[in-house]
Length: 428
Ligand code: PA5
Image (cartoon, rainbow, N blue to C red; front, side, top):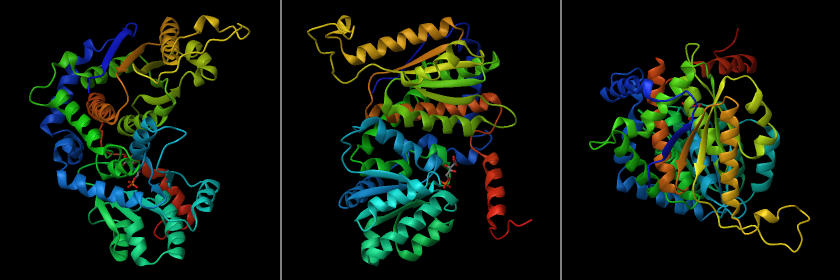
């Protein structure tokens, strides 16, 4: 694993330097465990807290899942985005191997009925994930898939096919899985949803998808040591602190929107995971950068105009991955398509040139661009990146003066919905 390099050369007049002292103070507050939300700091030590035996237990469950035909991962927000991010970043989009489907991350009836139609009567596994065990979307999806499995399989098979990941004691899912005798994994009390990818929440689906959960944790551990270990990097080389300081400096200059852009389609969900992490951690008390994401170069053909020329309230964080697949542009007899000048050049190099050209165009147009350069996309690199972003997020939110670990605003839509649907206790 190499530490991602942060390149500020196109970040215009925004630099992390002016806020490094504040970033260091926020880090000290976090490390002293006296910060707001300090009951949810378990994520900080996960890479060294996970035991060999619990990793083995997860891997055995993953093997059991792979004996079935496919896996449905049921969860929403922090209970599915991290796993989906890792799985889609690494596996081939066209020959992904063991089929993994996602459900309960929304309530679209067409999506769920089509997935049920595809799987009904087949021997599929389910991993239902909910920290609270009471969330409506995954609760409903679980009822749908459980109902289908029960029609075709007896209790013994169901115990082989269904795995729950939830709180040790609380919630309806805990009750349900205890009464059906299902195999369950626990989400530690001191780890919040969006910080839970490095627990069984993310590790079981990742392992079931045939990826290396141990390497993911190894990468996270290396990053943990680099950003906060005994021999941690100096602050001016610490990527998490630099990133937290930089984005707060951008915010102080009126840049209210951060656009995370990547040039690899497999990284779409890594950006979705990042959006939740920062959006839910920082958007409080009328404050917080709005985290947005775009897939380039696709979105340059839809959002490029706005970014180049629209309101200057935006800054861009660009994920730049050095290595790519080997795919040179083939030679052709004629130059009818006008692409002769690209012959023999690797597609990945052309894509990275597009990245450089876009960074130049956007920074010339007044959009500060920070480049985060990753060597490659492996489980280990992703584990490191995930840990780095979690640490940066906690520091950044503390710099902003909000509790990084709660999400009081999420309840409002739920209360309205429950009242409208007539949930007992919500009338009036
Ligand atoms: O970060 C959070 O806590 C939330 O976004 C949750 O991840 C999300 O709401 C899902 O909650 P649960 O895992 O309790 O079903």
